Image 1 (cartoon, rainbow, N blue to C red):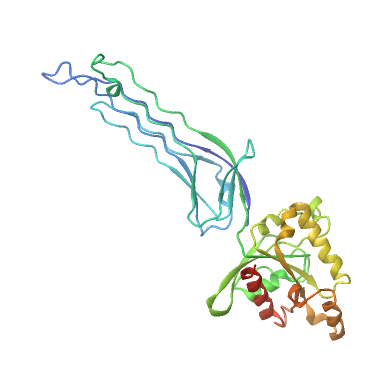
Image 2 (image 1 turned 90 degrees about the horizontal axis):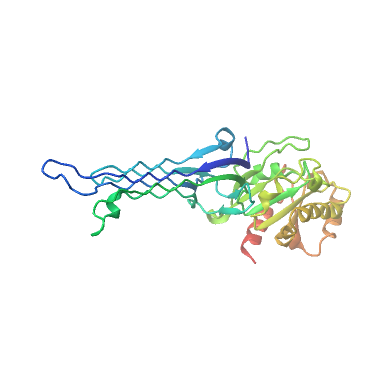
Length: 327
């Protein structure tokens, strides 16, 4: 199951208290203070795990707590530090303070980690307070308090190319043909209910990542269809490919509709590099193909493909690669 958002609570560990103690041994009746320091509380740390692809685990566990520090002991023994709480998340996870909305971290790099809740400092024992004028201090320090946060986690997939189109435009079929991904494919709308990623191999072992998101329909920004809940997964992509069926009666209008839906979500999406892919050309009579080419100013703005017959797929991969590597 693909889950791309979750709410959790995290709490660091409390610091251990310092110890109030005096050395008392045979023949050493006034040995002086020997209270040790308390241990530090554990931290809450988020760490990227590239083997994870969803926030599903957080649906079943929502509370995370680091260990408390142990109290100091006599003979100047320092308490044990509390265990850190390491929370593993997928690459591309954004961590927000659920109460303020502040972004605490954006984990986009592999093996990146961030400390979110710092453990309390260990309190000092009375041995720390001994001075030439106060050789028998009878006070110590309590350990530092823990930190508590309500957090909102949001996952935005990291891909090089994002596929955008209406339901049943052929996005999943294309992804299955040019990569090793196996998205669900069927001849009805909204087959894809969650984003899919595929690694595309190009010439000379070159690779790039393509993201297929569920289909968008007109009015998605106001909740129609599956809404715009998955558009965020193309915010990190460098290139957007608009897929439009060749049998559409208004290809230009369809393209404008898709662009307007992206603009309603985030206007900056329209500033990304893009090109148009006309799909299902196997369903077209040859004369109509010539009409399609007249909709675009030059051949670098579009390509014609049939994922079923394989026509144009190598050209499509070449265009994706060129758009990624040519500014």
